[in-house]
Image 1 (tube, rainbow, N blue to C red):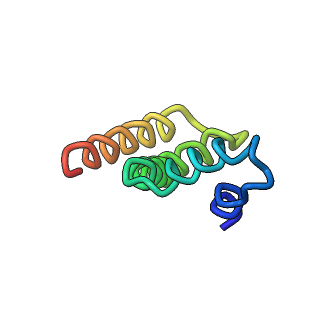
Image 2 (image 1 turned 30 degrees about the horizontal axis):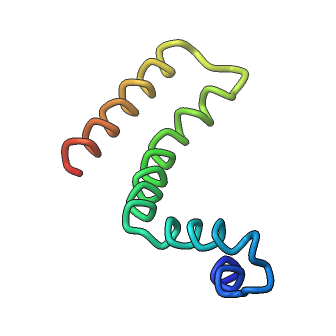
Length: 80
């Protein structure tokens, strides 16, 4: 991994600390957990986002998509 190599390379001392910090952050559980949650949320909202970008869209179908998206996000929140 590039960050790990920079962190271990003593010839680039000015970047060593930043690379070490970044590498530890990227390898942490919190980062992986937040990344997984964001992947799930983006997957849920993708359908709504794609629909809202269409030129011909009636308000009833958009409202249905918003309701469905809210329900799915609430389910993700409740079920964890």
